[in-house]
Image 1 (spheres, rainbow, N blue to C red):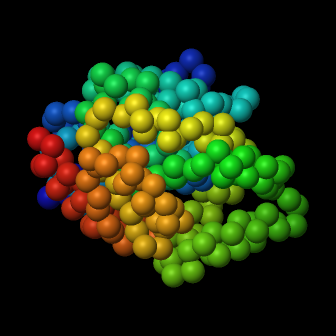
Image 2: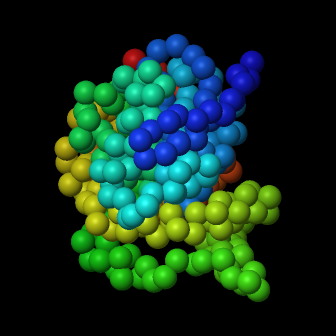
Amino acid sequence: MTRAVRKLYVDLPAGQVHCRMVTGTGPAILFLHQTASSSASFELLLRALDVPNPLVAIDTPGFGASFDPAVDPSLADYAGWICATADGLGITSFHVFGHHTGATLALHIAATAPGRVASVMLSGPEFMTPAERADLAASLGAPLAPRRDGGHLLENWAYAAQFNPECDVELLHQEVLAMARAWRGRPQAYRAVAAGDSVALAARLAAPALILTSPGDYFHAALDRARALLPTATIAQTGGDNFQPSADPEGVARAIERFLAQIA
């Protein structure tokens, strides 16, 4: 039977963090979204999963219904807010699933708080080289702020449609709305990723790892890097391209279930 997904807020000193949660037993699974999405991108996956664990999808600050950071956060700042959110929910240890930016954040949490992390599931991890991170930082100009003529909405649509040509139009619509809401948070998160080093974080990973990839995903071409950096990781291929959790929730759910059974 599909379990109910409820929404809630956790109060932190910096502001409120919004979550979607499914109750359960055992270690929780935290879900961290890509830029510039929100916990809404995990709604179908939370409903598709057949596991007893509590499931918690978190709106990273700057996205969804969570608070907006006053200044540019670092990966450490984002990780601290995620762990504080888990604390606020009474969660001490957890599995963590990260999608794109969320995967980098999941690696950071696992590397810096290894005692809390039971396993790491990385959907489309980036593993950029220093040169690629420098290129990302250099490409980030002024935020795509709201404009009176609404042109920023068309620019967001054109960007999302370009990289996801086969995406269901309603899903594309959902993601573009998330991008428009997170016009400040989007470059903030990318700057944090560019300033970080996912390769170094991978070298510190001790927890069991699952890498999920999709042939149409932007980072699918870097799968060999991921294999080399995490040679003991389980690899699973799904559909969904850049939107694996929302475009192929059943495929992602089955991959998660097999992985958790494997490491139990």
